[in-house]
Length: 496
Image (cartoon, rainbow, N blue to C red):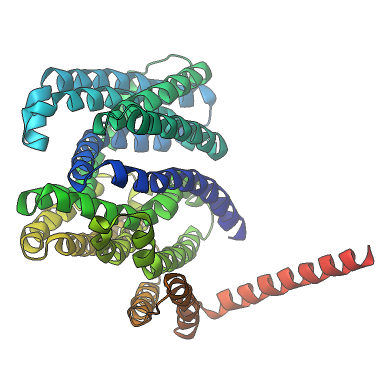
């Protein structure tokens, strides 16, 4: 058990480091973007990015999950390499066709997304970027399957450096505005993708197996609905906001959502990247059910504590890094952070579905959750605007978690301790409410006082029984061991 925690922590930390670098660049660019772009420009960029993300999800997500799953279906390198190569060839063919369609009908897509055909050049650029993104995703899945987290993060960092440099050059030096960001994305994605694709082909070689393609499609095709549903759950509210409010509201909401989405970038996605490989190996071990249950509790605790810490300081952070016209973005961050706590729970509950290969349940789960989200968007956004969109996301992810638990327990029962969800979430919400009563005339002092409330959260979960007796005993052993090593280190240093 401890060995599994160490492995998961190691790879999750490495992936998280990559995402931290990515988010650090993103947050470095927030003052930059908000200085050179109006909220309307920021909203336009958000809609373009989301449109590309939707198509990318439909093309990539199902194949990526299939590559990782069927890579571990075989024990020999030849068959494993054929899985990757088959996926690469298939993805490249489909992506080339879709990108060509985007360029041919660019004016129509511009009208559909941005309500004007005049931005057709933007569609050209994001269509070309989409092709490289699809190829890149297969290469990244291959590295994930090999659990080569360090190499993946290094390549991600190179891409970030290129993107950051080009963004500054195009926007600040050439004064190209929004189109400069799109050129930057195309160039940086293209260069890194070419390098990763060449590396992947050199290792797996060219090969195509029709039976393996059929297996990949059979496993992954239900995930097309899951991918589309994931997009609806995470991002469709921007299009509703555009319809019921205005593009500036979309820009302000997008900024706030970016902070709330940190929970996904820094914890959930890094965890998913290693969990997608590790869960199949854990399932082969004795007492796998207990291992899954305990790992869930620790994952939940980290997720909830991070959401609370973010929510405690976000008002001060946005006041510092963004102009006044973006300040209202802070209001939605705690709500979005809560939503992603339940998203993390919902994803973990799908473990049994993946292990049992019953991916049809994921299609049903995603479609039902997306339908609930659309209904809530229609109900809440016209009345409550951005806050309505955020709460629609919370309620949708709660529904997704409940339904995912029911489906997963049907095909692969795991003895989860459901009461721990109530303890962690209720404690975090109560502490956050107390933090709203804390205020001083000094922003830094206020932020420090609020962050100190994380200690209150820690005390609450201990007192309310989040950890059972066995876990408390283990924690004491770990603490005593750490103290012992520290004392030995100090004594050794004093002797020298």
